[in-house]
Length: 240
Figure 1 (cartoon, rainbow, N blue to C red):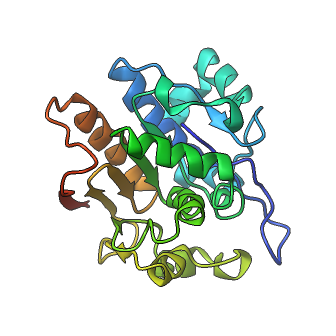
Figure 2: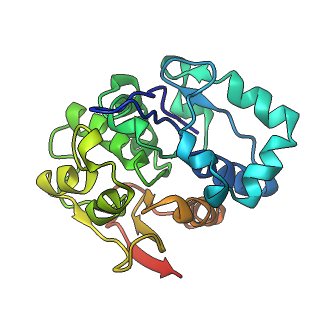
Figure 3: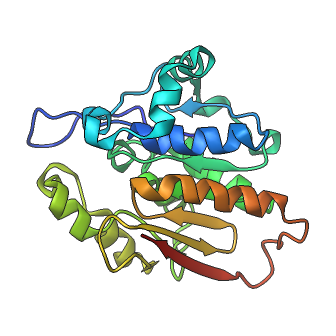
């Protein structure tokens, strides 16, 4: 799992970072399915956590489980640096959100190379909420990579509702659409929505984090997983 190291927002003293539920929900889906999970960030160490994600109304069961899990808390506090990670050592990669990826993972060359290495090897790449901003670094490496891709990501409407549209460098939905991406989201803001386009598995918002992880686990368990050169299948589903 690759998480942001960025915490500052624009035109405000508010902080951002990892949306904690977008880490804990998938993390325990993977752990409970028997996977080993390594935690990574551009700078290593403990990633910043978005304070809003720790408010009572945003706490999930996995958040509470994490607080009682000393091993997981230790791993989160000691993430490895992104530049030391090789796709050949893993089955898949998952990018949680929080607004931080808009700044660092979107332009991190190591992250962009890693994404291409996974996809080129026929291994899935998953991201949720603002995590799909990491795909922008892959676009920088191979211009045109994102054109025609079908993904889900935090919507402009949701950005307006949470009141952070003026504190980010760009609106992720708009940026993606400018690059030729087809954004597929729930018509109702903040409902869970997952989009599968070949080896790319993406989700719209915090409620989508667990479902994206489940979709990734299903893909890993599928013995007939498609190869990159085959025509990509597409799926989408929304949950209330």
